[in-house]
Image 1 (tube, rainbow, N blue to C red):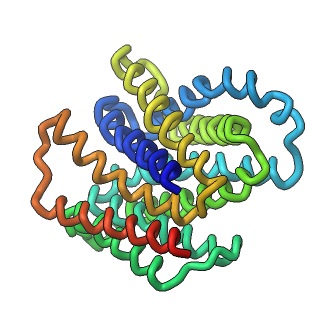
Image 2 (cartoon, rainbow, N blue to C red):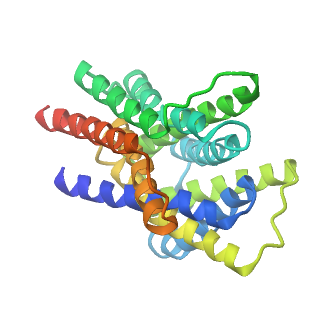
Length: 287
């Protein structure tokens, strides 16, 4: 469990860079998401061909179908969540997209028969409260925000479905076979969405492509790959709740890079998030 927690911590730190790189690209949301997953796929391709080609060729049936859906869910997660920021406040988007641990817990209980006790549920709610506090508590309800709020909520559901698929497939499939398929399908889905919404994929300055590459490498190849590695050994809702550490990491990085001083409430929110995560894993260790 200690090794798993350490690697999940590395994953959270890596994924926390996503918000920084997205801000630096200055590109449209769908284009950013497309290049993120495209470069991630290219980085994984040599490893997949070297280590997993025989396995990739033989994938069929339920494993193939669930892997394809996992890639679709991941692509839709990035598309809906990032786009939601254009239609609603950051606070609304953050609060709604971080509800994914609730959906993961529900799906884990219904589909995988993984029991969720009252302590774990309370800890998840505490971590979600921390996320709400970090967002500033400025949760607005109104017609102007409705479309963006719906997109953010769909993003949370898609993230939960993506984690659930990973939990199922990783019991049967090696890491590089799985993530190559997922990242490739995700990039394909995002490419199709870019065509539908006529999002330009060029021209962008070389520096923007540098941020695209780093976005594909650090938060995705390192961060998401470690999450998918963990899904073989750790229940989906445990992986899901650790993702709530991302806004804390992003806040720290924003302070270090952009000198954005976080509000006092951010510290309280961080304490709530990490307390919730600690309680979930402590309860799991006792069990």
